[in-house]
Length: 295
Figure 1 (cartoon, rainbow, N blue to C red):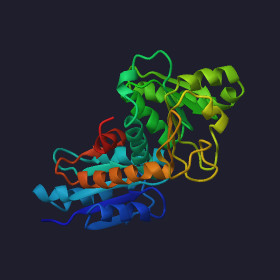
Figure 2 (cartoon, rainbow, N blue to C red):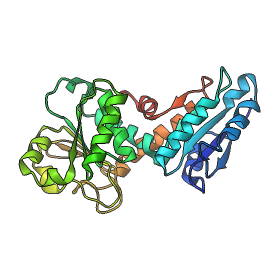
Figure 3 (spheres, rainbow, N blue to C red):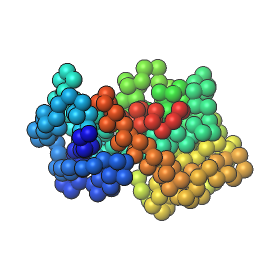
């Protein structure tokens, strides 16, 4: 049987050692890392993956796309898939900055406690995503609305929040998604209270070291699930420790970044293994959520 070879296409100058190690731990035999990958220079690398093996052996080659520039990585992924033709294709996984695996893990954690699909008819928003215009926040919101949960995107930039909401509406017809400016929300106690009182799920996916929800705001809520994906102090939701994993406080449940991290790593390794299944899958956030479990 042909050895499993993974082309690690990274948009940064130096390919991620993290992604390479996870691939090896997932059972890949050989990782071929390439840095500085762009849509303009990726095609010869893809051709190398497509044409060096034939028949069933082609299924032992796959492509992982990463890097810190998520938009650039998405453009690379589109170019990679456009290069394939007929049965001459390999499995592709997109996970720049761990955005897809982290978002999927967050939704898997929420679904352990909340019937996301059952709240589709709610008039008020049951889910709030803080820092929603970043790579992880956008994907968390997209995964939630695909499963019928109304979501409010909260960002420090009102225009960016509105743009992110519109992108989700185009991607998910019928999506119940709204956008709120964090500054305006903080300055409008009545509006903040109304939004938070309705929320059953709050996910903080903002920049490292920025507190987005204070302990006072959190305690004013009627419970629910709180997930903070930032492990760098100060954390995004005050009072949540990075190691929290379904820790309870009254009617509230807390997950910290490391508490979600175990599920993220399981999804990452399982997705790598899935690339070599023989059907040349293209794995984005939705597929990784499916790998993580029903939501």
